[in-house]
Amino acid sequence: MKILVTTDFSSNSKAAIQFAANFSKQTKGAELIFYSAVEMMQPASWNLSFYKTYAKEEKARLTKDLEKFVKSAIGTNKNVLLGCKYVIDFTQGTEKAIIEYAVKSKCQFICIATNGAGILRKLMGTHTSYLVNHSSVPVLAIPSKYKTKAIKKTTYVSDFENLIPELNKVSKLSGQLKCQTEALHYARMGTSHPDTINKIKLFSKPAYLGIKVNILETNIEYSLVDRLTKYIGKQHPDLIILFTRQKKGFFEQLFLPSKAAELTFSTKIPTLIYPKN
Image 1 (cartoon, one colour):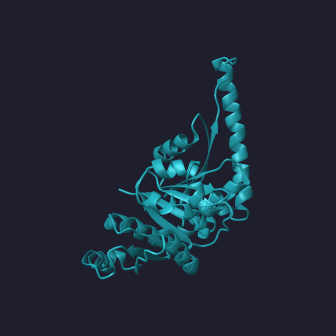
Image 2: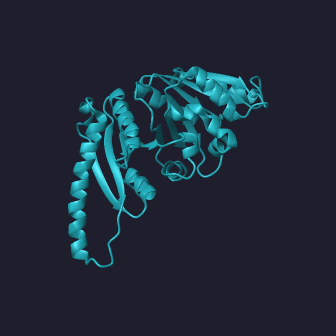
Image 3: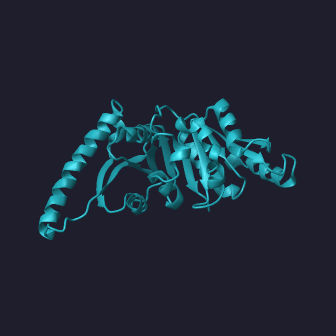
């Protein structure tokens, strides 16, 4: 497993570094690639030879700075850095460069810290937003104020569409983390609807026995955002897992309502967002 961990050398980005280090330790060997995309263009007054020499020297300097920054963020947990890579990429488009490098390096996840108001508000109009809406590589969004701890419990929020492919990914991750996992679904047609019952039967298959399914009635008096806020506030999962149709679909329906700012758990809990098939 490879994880591309992005940083802009800010203190906010340390949360992603720390999370990735702990994730690697818990999965016993995820390879970490610490990556910073630096926007740089050749000044018109510089000839190409001078610019190439400058770029080479600047990349070497920044790579050393990146290694120093990562080690300072990791602290005493430096064993996870064995075999890791430090990459500085000069580019004119940060988000596209991150995706391209992750794909080229065959990374399983992109890990990025969110800033300020937290995941749900900052996913709109930020680097994270672009990655979620365009990356074929799943994104781990880590709140900048998150305090790293072991992942013991994950909540997979499901709309029960494309369930088997999603369960395969969730089950695999749960096995790697050796954590408890629940699938949370709000049944629009009711918990006794035949389609809901048939979907529940899938969880009895041997491959998914480790995933606890939790089906709740949909209370139309409250938005999905409000229901999730209350539920997750009580259950305190260590990781939230979502699948999104990129650009439009379930993800936007979930997070674009004006009440998204009320999702206080967004500033505390890491979220893993897979692109939905």
